[in-house]
Amino acid sequence: QVQLVESGGGLVQPGGSLRLSCAASGIISSIWNMAWYREAPGKQRELVAELTAGGNTNLAASVKGRFTISRDNAKNTVYLQMNSVKPEDTAVYYCSVKSVVTARAYWGQGTQVTVSS
Image 1: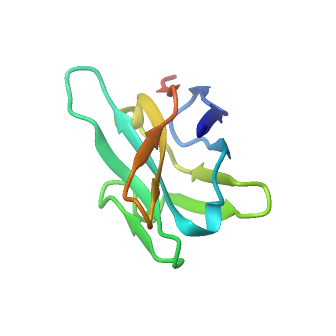
Image 2 (image 1 turned 60 degrees about the vertical axis):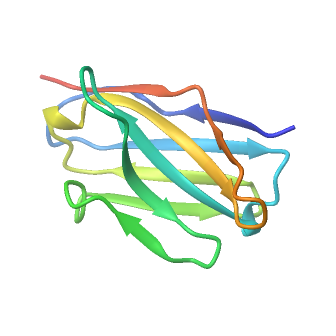
């Protein structure tokens, strides 16, 4: 059974940094695409960053140059390094993994990130 456990969310001041982690169990991360999404109040869930099994990276335009996605296949963990955060980055951040074999996707429970002074 696939389980995703996110951590690292919290309150951070504008311009600060935060690192989110998502530990996956029940998968072999090297054959799964891994991604971070976010959902702000009153808005639709949107893709923030994706790292494919093949190593390709896709970042939302709003976070390019500030956020970085990376993975540790040995730990089955994906990270989102958030630098120079802005109030508009405030949202619940969700980790997602998608099998490149079956296309089945799984979601974490979400972690709150609040950017405020």
